[in-house]
Amino acid sequence: MSKRINLQALKKMKLTKVIISGGGTGGHIFPALAIADEIKRSNSNADILFIGAEGKMEMEKVPQAGYPIVGLPIMGLQRKLTLKNLLLPFKIVQSLAKAFFVIRRFKPELVIGVGGYASGPTLQMAQLLGVPTLLQEQNSFPGKTNQILARKAKAICVAYPNMEKFFDPKKIKLTGNPVRAYLLQDLSVLKAEAAQHFGLDPNKATLFVMGGSLGAKTLNLALRAALPTFEAGTVQVLWQCGKSYEQELAQFEASLPANVKVFPFIQRMDLAYALSTVIISRAGALSVSELALVAKPTILVPSPNVAEDHQTKNARALVDRSAAILVTDAQASEKLVATALDLISDVAKQQELSAALTSFALPNATNAIMEVCINSAKL
Image 1: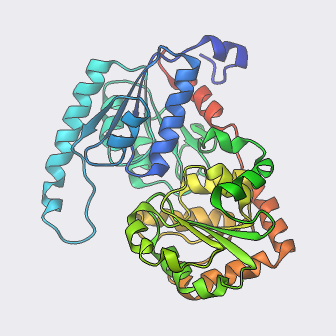
Image 2 (image 1 turned 180 degrees about the vertical axis):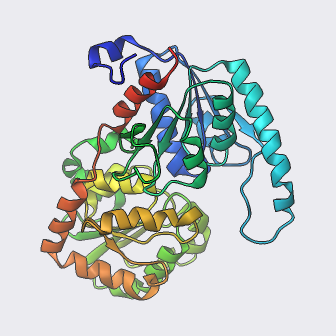
């Protein structure tokens, strides 16, 4: 099979049995579901099985999306001293054994790893059984597990350039991260609808603060402390506080300025992006990919609580090319809101950031990954 298939040939070739493994966070799960949906669009009869980690969010989100999932008892190494770490070797062995039997019974043409605890044992067993594997690496700095799995993977789909220092250059495919399809439209036409949806003014500058589906304590505290700043009403705030902080923020929601709207979770992210003048965000890989597509001026506040400080490295990839502004988690309480207000008042800086951010956009990621999947599969 040639290394690259033309579009006509691609349409004739279909994946019929695929395992997708990984999860733990939305940044892993949503790209995995986007890949699964694309496989289904190509072949409605395709049989797709997910393998996740017991107790993690994929065990809920994947069935909600209509796909079956098998859970492994795998767990991560705890940073603090705990008896759970003594169980880790046994959990790994159990997970490897379960993955082995699931793969041998299912007989997939391809196993795709998207990151997260379950992808390690799943792809290790697939490689042992001679099943082609593919990695979808969302971050600019891959974890140790993916660096090891990449040695026997057929291909590695990446979202950032200059990944040759981690992976075999011959295997790297710069595809981007799959994002929600509705973000691929012209969002500017949605601004009036967005203002009505959130109860805000379409003619005012809007600061959109998003800390992910669970929320970000640092961002919430910084915004909460700065609420008097927004009482004048010249800048309005759209604030996704996260489900974890819903009850805490509900206690003072009634006293919020009229131009500050707080939501635990925002389903219509297209409308939130459409209304935004400036965005404050964590620097998860999926968020960064979406921000590159919408190209709104962005301040990134990387979470310090992720493995190998991935988010800081994701942010640096943009900041070093003048595509975003970086405020560290430690600086947020003093600098974050002031930096955002300065940016809102600096139209030239906004335009500079947006133009540079656009260079990171890879809108055809899902189709590109699909092509790599077909090239990599044993058809």
